[in-house]
Length: 171
Length: 171
Image (cartoon, rainbow over all chains, first blue to last red; front, top):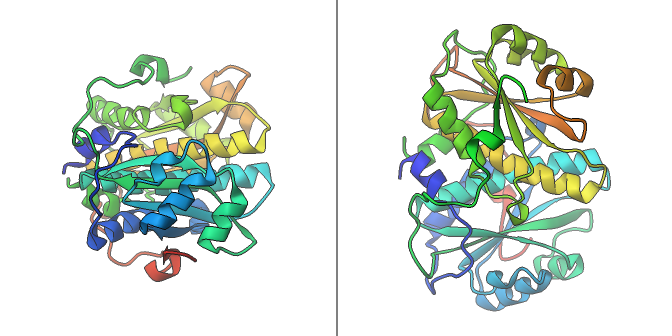
């Protein structure tokens, strides 16, 4: 798919068809994340990929808003170094956002929908995914073919108007 | 360009050709950012776009690592609500990273290179861009046609190996 069509087709998908994502496609999505830029190329991320149904159902319990994880074809946990420093948290967040977006555009290109979930029950998440105690996980990228309509460039979307968001020259 | 080619072609470009970005292309890049997902669709961002050479030279002084802003064709300041809450900072950072990546992939699709700059001199940035006092700017997205080789899918890149980053099933 053309890049701009993939960008405009990506939408938050939370109802997934009962259809697995092929290994090659999953690896392409992960590759898109791995190639993302990061602050001084630190790559402060690991991606833990869950595709097994029972484990997805358990992982869905890390947040009340994460029920869609249970029926996803694959969910990627973004695991990062743990810190309490607000500036480092922001910087890691920015880098993770770049990696997540790269994965979601690569997914849209393949007709695969994506959603997010936060992680509130950190202990449960760690118990399931077994990452070390100096790491944490705040975000999941949730993937699956849409149960309803396929991905197509969206014309009517809920975003602030262009002229409200964009300021040429100065505010 | 095919989406995955655009994703693999994006690289940090800091040496720009003396060639402006057409208004239509610039608006397409901004549209890609505007369409990015955000936490409960809050869209906690404004994009201030600078293309005037003298103002780019001034904006380049907001950080010692931002010299490439001076010779860019356009630089987009990502302006957000100001907060000291570490979790909100992380969340805004994540959303901004998604918007930035969307813009950089849309730029790569058009053969336009992109780089980042941090903002250290917050007062200077605000004086130049005139955003209100309840907003701040921590990141610039810096754009221009590459001065050296055009964007092409990168085979040899400085990233951690796939099997180091990606964990299937559990860590």
